[in-house]
Image: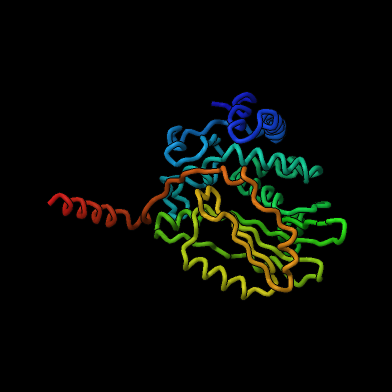
Length: 306
């Protein structure tokens, strides 16, 4: 079923005043229509799930094929549901608002090809992380767009009326974090391919990494992240957001002492940010291990009956 302007407004009104919901619904229809993305209601999670999880009912929509499928033969993509094959309408509404507020010359045109492709959720994630910075004077695409050696997403110019600062922001989604939850029960955070994106910078500039994960990392993973951060001299700040956090502390942040000023420019999470929830399905073993896994389950079942 396609989501109409009225459907979108009604869904968003659960999270915000009706006038704001109506405005965002209009923006969503205009911007997604402009890039050619058709919003269709996703049915992977049943309506009763949200009450069971103790959250406001979420409206999820179908995202373009991303390579994720619960029946995938690739163990790394055997996932389905929230945050991988379903987008969250509330989060989409935030990204549309952020794009219009801060990316006037870029949104949505520069993202048009990504929003209708496997990169749909990653593109929105890049936009969403902009909201955490206050005093934004202007935003430029990072050197990734020019194929330079460094390739972070955003160069953010900040100005509070007293001083100016610049943030080089690299943004990543880590759905593999969910996969590890199902496979091992110990969700991790991959830091692969990040440090090389940054180099030395001036005193008024900081290199910051912003990661979105979907399940609280294990204690071992947090220790790994801390060690990684301390070992990378050109990474000055690290932010990790746990999407659909369901009660855990959602924003982890670390800054090097010499760039502690960058933390001063961070906004706190808004109540709306915490309302996004979801549930993902994933396989409990690799495809090659499936026969043995099923036999072990059967054996446990037989013992439980005896």
